[in-house]
Amino acid sequence: MVIAEFTLVPVGKGESLSPYVARISRIIRKSGLRNQLTPMSTIVEGNWDNVFGLIRACTRALEKDCRRISLSIKVDIRKGSKYRMDRKVKVVEGLLAKGR
Image 1 (cartoon, rainbow, N blue to C red):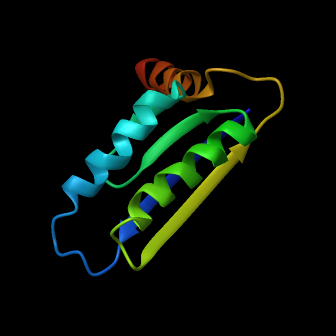
Image 2: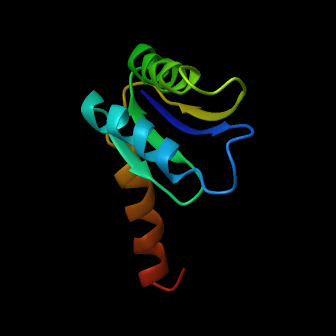
């Protein structure tokens, strides 16, 4: 399984990029992959092909009217583990609750 954090930035499209974020967020939500939108990026979880296929689809959606796009990707790969996005956060929150 893969957890990928990625950011797509259309270059030269002004200060507020919310319409572009909304455009790719619709694609992400329709994908069925576990995902989390953050103020600075999007995190998705799934198998390699599905995650990178989704990133490609999001990029292509912006290419329609964006001449230049900056793409940053950070990936965590771990065999045989599902729902790591939730578990990783719960483990840390549990330790914080115990004062560790």
